[in-house]
Length: 215
Ligand code: AMP
Image (cartoon, rainbow, N blue to C red; front, side):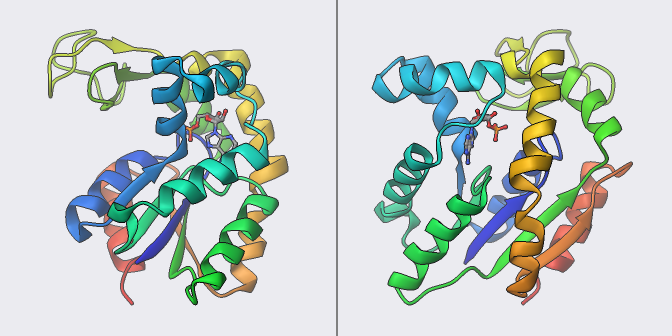
């Protein structure tokens, strides 16, 4: 299975990816998580991507493409994968198509989780993420049982630097300019399925995703 999750930042791609992984056992590859891990390790990749992560800008295509194609070539991705946060530009989508075509493969599905900008701002500004396990909470909509503490593992909840107001605005701008053109790109190829995420709970979105994943 080769699936791409598309949608604005804060649409719930990570949450749905986790559920799809549990249901179908497919490998979840999140470029945002890979870059945040590298930034935490402070290795060469981490030092290069850190300024982009902090400002909400996009990491240059050439670097992202190299990192992702290397990751998809690893043995645990041989039976399929679900990409979350990649591709984010048309050149990235073209590079992915080319790499798949070279192996005689193609994308099975692109799931678009559509959410209005106004709702995105509210979701991202209240989002808190567990520093230990990555689980997401929201100060108002999905509050943890104990403030600042992860329900699952007891880790500390923190706000992502790019979930601060200036960065949110920048990310939404980038989404509309660079990523939204992927909607017609994949629609033309007949692989796009749109799921409504505005004013929907994660369970309601999951239900639509389950239907959309039917062959
Ligand atoms: P995310 O967790 O998907 O919102 O990604 C967090 C940040 O990582 C983004 O704001 C970008 O700076 C960077 N990033 C993740 N995926 C990509 C990508 N496909 N292309 C460029 N930058 C990316």
